[in-house]
Length: 163
Image (cartoon, rainbow, N blue to C red; front, side, top):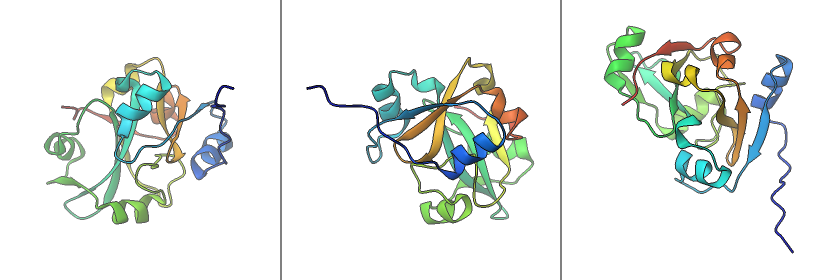
C-alpha cells in the first residue's frame, strides 16, 4: 500500500493573512528535515531550488528587525542589503530574536502574518519568476503564490543583494 502523501496542514497566521486579502495560493506540505533548508524542500516537492524562497529575519545597525526574501540557492550580501536600505550594516537575527519578531519558529518563518509589522525586502530577480514557493507559517509547509503578491499585497521593496 502506497504511503499517503496528503497531509492536512492546519491554518496558520500566514494562510489566514493570505485568505483575508483574497490571495490564491497552493499548499505544499513536505517532511521537514532539521537544517535541510530549501534544498531539501525543493527536492521533496520537485521544484527548482531557485524558485523556493527563504524568509530571513535580519536586523540593521539600530537592531531594527527586517525580512529579506531570497532565492533558496542564493545567499544575501548583507553589505549590499545595508546599502540598498540605507543602513550602516545588516546582520542575521539570532533564532530566538527572529522568533520573537516574526512569531514563527525558525524553519517555519513566513513573511505573511508576522507578529510585528516588519519591513520586507525581496531580491528583485524573484519577481521575474513565473511562480514561487514560500513558507506557509510552519515547518514542512510551503505555499505557492505569484511573485507579484510580494510587492502588490505584502508591500515588499525590491532590492539587489543576491550572491
